Length: 209
Image (cartoon, rainbow, N blue to C red; front, side, top):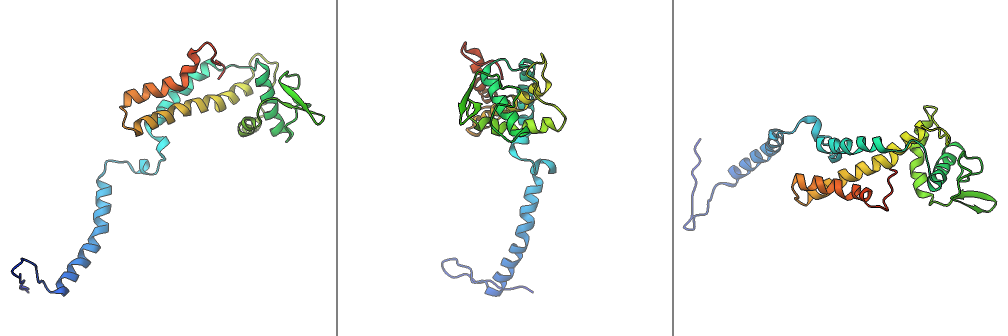
């Protein structure tokens, strides 16, 4: 069946409304399929579509490339009072559910204060509280801080998965920020590595990650 179409002197189409509605419904039914086809045409693996942004191959490679060298220079035992004091707080939270240091292996730390009859770390309590879950995980494997061994495996792993992982994660985040501003891949990589690791080049830098 051929439907005649009329145009007025201005060129407007006077197509019957019933025909127009039929065409609209046809387009509406085809639109979802067009969207699905466009998405499927992209060269993205199914697994990649469901991965969060920080699990891209570049992010994982950059994290490991930063974190693994850090392990080579991570200390195997605490050597200064402010670290032993903080470790005593972590130990107390996990093993005794307390912030006090009286029963801690690190109770002889010089970086402590006396308050209301109990000794507490002079360091702010927020960081040990955030680090406590890592020590709790180590305790599930019967590892604990020694404070006397030349190689304290619990301290080494604790430092690697707290300070070391945080530093490597900072490199990944800075790289992502630079690339988000359109900086080239090479420049963003160098900036990401130089900014967090640059403090180690300073004489006053703390070389104990």
